[in-house]
Image (cartoon, rainbow, N blue to C red):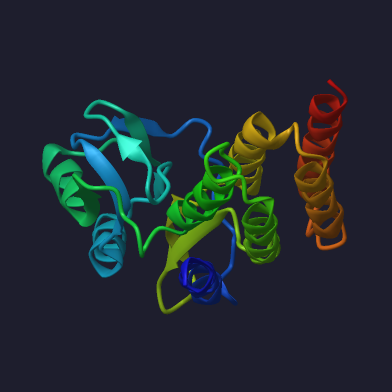
Amino acid sequence: DIHDRTKNEIEYISKEQNGTSSKFEDTAHWEKNIITKTGYFYGVLKESLLKIAKENKIKIAINLFKGQFILDGTIGLLTNKPLSKKQEKEIMDALLFSHEELRGENYIYGFRQISEIGIKAMSPGINDPGTALNTIDYLTSLFIILMKKPEWEHLSDVDEKNWARIKNVKFSEVLYNVLATYRLYCKHDITVMRKLMYMLRTLESHVINSNQMADIRIEMEQLQLDAKS
């Protein structure tokens, strides 16, 4: 169930962006704006944000990803020109935050849940490597889908002009977090370590770009070091 829910969430995001141009201005010298809310970021009111951007002719880059915990004062919003107090409030009102971590609507949480099941199965009190191996199969399936997801989610008008973009969590970050947990608790078990290596070799054959290949190679090297030690 966790696998299917997570898979559907990733595919929904990818489908929404299918056919959307990824063209967006360089944000290196844009105005930095602080987030005035605290909590778990879980998305934006897309129609509202698009309307604000078009009416005020403002390009917006939101450097927050879904499920990320944000503190008041975090610089997480870039604009191509300074904002008035009114504009700033309107944009903040279009950003959605929750005091509780999202589950069903946050695919990162799905990766973590499956990892936790695998790690708990390897605890001395349970000692069930078979379940740990099964979780790695499900994670392999999800990683292949995740690699197809764009790095940014864009909000565009009817003329397909992008007015805003929202950060998606990087493949490298999800891969590192999952592998770091398994390496820590499973490096003594040769069957699990071999399974993790097999997962990485499978992902190698599904890479979309050279960055993903480099990320996988780094994890392979770390896995080999831990296994040898």
